[in-house]
Image 1 (cartoon, rainbow, N blue to C red):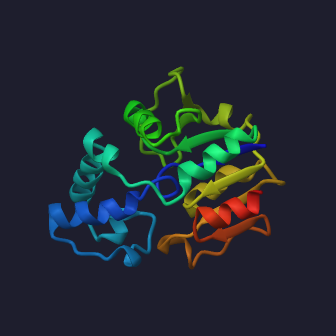
Image 2 (cartoon, rainbow, N blue to C red):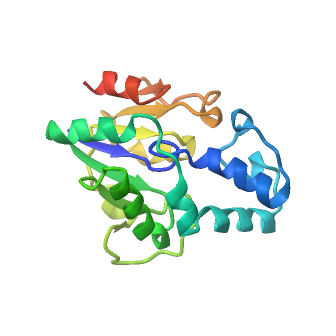
Length: 198
């Protein structure tokens, strides 16, 4: 099988780290369970300038490398690779974060997965023809059997795959959203994801 895996908040605890950053930079004490919007500017009630500072801090290499792995992620992905499944990490991180993201994966035992950057959220100045940077037209030529994703904003990238099974990694910002169809299943963590795939 070909499996799409999102990076932030599926492989690592990105939003949790951003709650610490928002408190450190702006004194905004928002409990993780109250991060109700994927849009962190809205979740933390930040000005445009504050949001830019938050994102810049959260994407510094040393900060990205410090993100904790979601429990069980590397174990499950390596099990799948050992069984012959093809794993592609499709991240909305800016391409400028590719090298440090690749390093994080390698340091967490995920050196056999392929990493691609896709400008899912219109955040990144686009790097055409860069290795491992997907243009939308190239992404839409790819086929996946299963996708693991947390962001409701990313679900539109699955419309071209009507038979895709989407395992929605349950997070505060997606618990209340209506899932697009019967192929979408909420999962509280990697143990449940493993069960559904196996």
